[in-house]
Length: 307
Image (cartoon, rainbow, N blue to C red):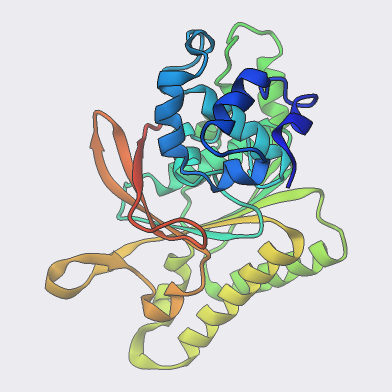
């Protein structure tokens, strides 16, 4: 816990005006800020705080977005700077290191796009390496390059070199069965424990359910044991090495034809965070909703746009 005024040297935007704004809402430390309802704080900021500072900002961003990004980076809770502003606000800090985050949704709901953008932003901001396990040939270097190429100054002559450098920070492996995945997870865990981790920051498995679902049929315990082993390894890797682990899960038909996350009730308790992508596109983008979170209430949602 640190007073906001102690952070001004490293983050100049935490100036006296902003600290006064925070104090008026009972916020005096970085912890106070992270525990606050950022949606409500954003609404107050639009009305009260330095509107001239917002004129040059991207539409939809507010001063609170910039400040909480700085604080969370300082506190080492945020995985990257500018992942998706709306998702960052919803999760009060974006994807978190040490957590297993599950993205649930039907086909074409945007799960892979979220994974690719998360990977590209970790690489782009030089936060570390990303290991990407691709189980269905969905990894697209071209799409990652598009995310990496987005720049406020697209005319820069260094852009291609920068994209090539950042692409090298994402290591993709094709994995097509649960046994190969378990072997690779054990090897990765051992490498991390031995500090042979090349400054790894994120692990992505897209999709985990496509490997586990085939071994769950028949009512036997063998498949569930394999699933539990995979879940344990993912939690160990996330916790021991303070990594952000992201996995995707598809939807299956439930009672009365309603869709529900695959892998059943026994898997439900494994991820720290479960996020549902609706797959319904509108003028406001794709809807993402919190199904489970250790600190935040379930049911909250927001829209984001894949660009």
